[in-house]
Length: 286
Image (tube, rainbow, N blue to C red; front, side):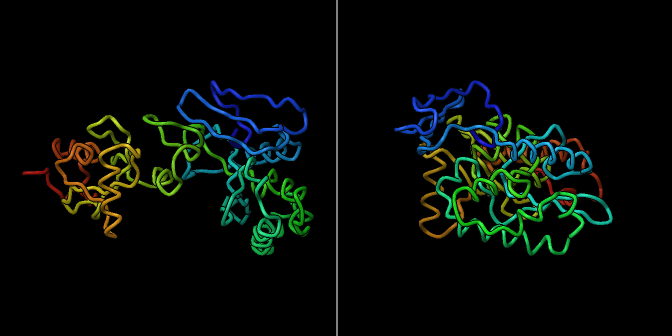
């Protein structure tokens, strides 16, 4: 299971051997997905992970206006690096995070590059290193699977605070990063609240779209970023990409109308703030 959080209604096939499963195992949820996990010891929260999760939540209590949302938080193995300056604690992310189940294919030499990257950053924050107690972690080269495991469950990797919907959410409620492509799912953290990233197409599929022009331009078209493989819009996207073009659909398409629905409602009711760039736009056909 991702990140040591309990997955609602999740089922697993327990390995017959308490140490290593001879044929791996599978996991699934009510949300229709199944994955086969390579042979490895059964998942168990390590003391290091339990400590990292507790420390992360303690540090996250001091965050104000956090981009990912508000507490309660789950602990995402996303490569979070906690730093402290005169304003207090804040978190940045390493260039890659390692999910717990991904450690079993992780090359120690490549994971060590993550350690080296973190070490260079933390050299500028000695007080944070001391308070986090990570001097030995940063200074110890990663050369084997045991070292990878230590890094994976440490406060330098299992350390990104995410609300449950952003972490494990499924559509139509929320497209969490464990179920949807991160380059798409992470748009939800910074988009305008009145633009719908995930919309429903004519076939009832959840698809992700983005504007093709700045806010207030009056351009009601959208670009399709993600769609189920069997959908009509997926075919549109594939055809466009084969021509090295964005998959743009017209403003009259239902997905475009839904994406801009809240903005259109503001324009129709005259409730757009004067300093909002949207004020320069007009309703389609007006």
